[in-house]
Image (cartoon, rainbow, N blue to C red; front, side, top):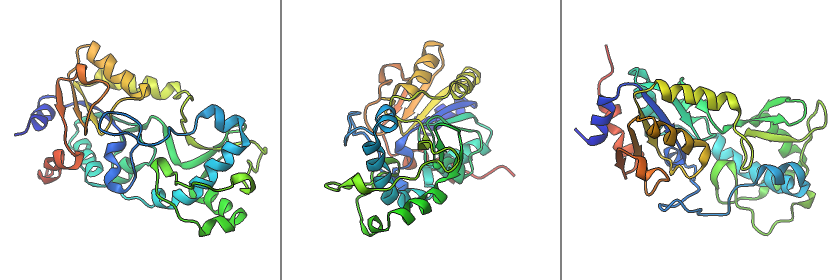
Length: 272
């Protein structure tokens, strides 16, 4: 039995926190290297998106090209393994920092999307909402010339469109109030909704231990739960490639690919 298997056996009610490393096998790139440093420029900030029309044009042009690959991504073995862990009754709550909804598509139900969901857009004035696929059709109709472009996939539905003039990209306003439409995700510099933080806090307090999967924990919004749980005396294990911000707090560190380290969950027979 591996140390990770032993940890999961010893602590039957887990608070699970996941990050980008869960989704790389689904073709969604991550942001950071093994040292926790940015591989690419940081994502757009909330302030820039809300206050700079040129930033919104650039964001939506890149997103229009990148969305089909992200929207069409499928759950991988890591998502399925964690869904199996929930089916065994061992997950108090899964809090994901990802916005791709792949945990839910794999069958997980006890999930909080800490940073929101990319498959939905919302108006920042009147809270009108629309599925991202429907918004994509509107973007496409207004910007047919851009549809011929191809670009490398970047994290979170983005695409690398270097050297383009975004000034003529036509971004739809909210059809109800003409407000700014934004992906229903938490941008850098934007606060995570309090109800998500409170629900996650209650869950780690009720759990026997914390399991981090595929996250460097460099972003405070997720790291705070691990730090608080460790300070409260909860055992913490991390399965991720490379350094994490919480390394000094860990009881167990597994530096390995997520799908390989969790493969035992898919090999074990289901109950009944």
